[in-house]
Length: 556
Ligand code: ACM
Image (cartoon, rainbow, N blue to C red; front, side):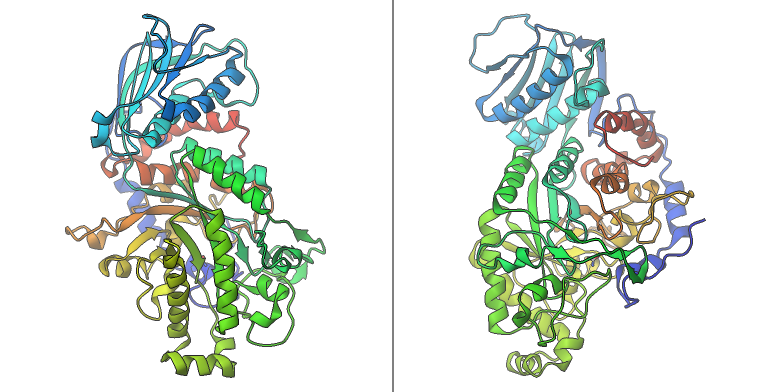
């Protein structure tokens, strides 16, 4: 048995570990029972499950003569497929453009744009494979890319190995697939502040997201324990803020490991990650935390705080009491930083955190109290809301939309156009949807993959909680309260969180992510009616062989 989670978050109500204790396991058990509806066993192990997949007669078998053919706008997608096919098989897979003369009967994998499929949306696709070849068609490039992801899963898992595997029969079963996603925001969040993850690990994570048709990479770049993105105007953010003296040892706040930890991404690194993601139809949403979770900023630029007392980049987990001031100087700093961020990230959405802001420093600071009087804020929450308004207006001036954790609702309406990321299960989401705000569902109860996935002995130390695969799979992003026909189009989708206090390496992250993130991918991609745990489990066994072929460390 797992011992009850320790409070690693300083014990404040509404913190992550506080919410862990409130998780209702009888409810989870009931949800699991009700999801055993009788669907036929999975015919083909595609994850996430397509809207329609029908088996035909026979199979297409790749060989040395197989060619690729793609419309010009799909060339990069075709090249990515070509690279993988070449590596796995050793054959050349010449890539022809769609105007090259046809050679009737030549074995081909064809990618094409077909505007008549507009009814499937920009991310939908049709895939038809017969013994003669494969055709993937879509109204837009994203759809063709997702068709290729399905094709990769129809091939033997050895396709995904880093090296050629001789002796494999490269067979694609004859199928007809029609598919499109349920939600547009299919997200995976990764905290690289608590533990820095090398650029290669970030790219690998994006590759895995793409294989599962996830399309928003929420990159949590800054926190009390580290600042991880180069900002030209403020070099001390990385010179000082990207390094900490040591890290907390396990759950014991009294103990440090004595080992310095650090790392950051240069602006060139960031551009590379953004470009790599874009080729895989993944949008990178950066998160720059403010005004809390900001101790690394204060270590670099103490003048931006509420007290002159110096701080170091935090070496402990939890929520630091040290927060940014609300002076004009600090707001100028924040907008300067965001101006560089906006230049680096084409995403419409820019996340500014906004969660877990301890009020003590603002309550004690004469300058903050004066600011409250000046702007008519009656509480620290209202002051926070005012600050979000200033930052939101700046982002709007750059054509971007502010995203914030659901605390941005606590002190009044969020800035116009803001997106609420609802993480506290009892709060936020429903309220925001009813107010007509755009919402991304990210509740601790179903999407916090830093919680334990198993109660078996030997699990690596985690932050606490218990979130088995089945609970992730049972997640329903549309709250039951809204099922009576209320407007739900403002639920953009959902995402899973990977906080890394207890995940020090890319392998540790992978183990917590997979296969639970595959379950989340099905929640956000596949039709609600087709959700079936037994069917998912049947597809998961072969799917885990794909993760093995990729060398991904995973749970079960
Ligand atoms: C959060 O977990 N503090 C958003």
